[in-house]
Amino acid sequence: MEKAKISLIRTFGRRRGKKLSARQRNLVDAVLPALLPADKEGGGAILEIGFGNGEHLILLAEQNPDKIIIGAEPFENGVAQLLAKITGEQGLVMPQYKNIRVWPDDIRKMPALGGSRFDCIYILHPDPWPKARHEKRRLLSAEFLKTLGTLVSKDGSIIVGTDHADYYDWILEQAKSAGLKIKARGGVAIKTKYQEKNLSGSKRTMYLALFPKA
Ligand SMILES: C[S@@+](CC[C@H](N)C(=O)[O-])C[C@H]1O[C@@H](n2cnc3c(N)ncnc32)[C@H](O)[C@@H]1O
Image 1 (cartoon, helix red, strand yellow):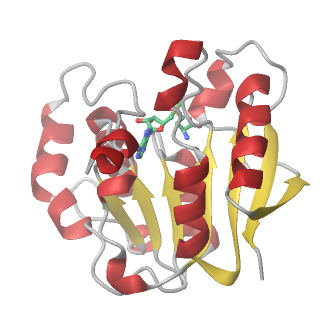
Image 2 (spheres, helix red, strand yellow):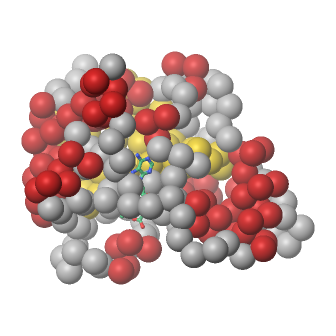
């Protein structure tokens, strides 16, 4: 019980920002419910945790038309931005984005989707929580990485990118403790919004690919 409480400590900054536009509000109320991931949709799907404004999620959907792409994001304004990008004037999801599903909440609350396993899980620029007293808010703890390791398929991978050097080293330690195989890897195909903002002042994002051990 106590353990469950600790693992659900808040890992994101906020749920809401500025007021949504009328169109965004309508999309969240009317379109989002139909995009919730359904049971069994996790099998062979790609998951992005903390998709921000959704630019990488959209690219994944375009590049993988035959796969379900699930995005998790508790920040309502980010969800609304994504919905605005994938819908046309009539408020209908455009054909090329029909494979997108959205979990508008903390990923740790998402049902395990029928025990199915993802092909790949992306976490790009997780909140670094740089102050020592906030370290417990970092999402990629050994405990959580271990769970993710059970959610990817045998040949699947967890791709992590951060421009925060301390967090990168910390994630490496956590991944080792979680018993995952670790490889450095090149970047993903686009720069995300957070990366463009370059809040950490670092020049580059460092990427890791993590694999469940055979
Ligand atoms: C620094 S932002 C990066 C956003 C985006 N990936 C990018 O690179 O622009 C981190 C994102 O992770 C989300 N996040 C944090 N904790 C999360 C959690 N437990 N489940 C899902 N998303 C989470 C935050 O709401 C935030 O949008």
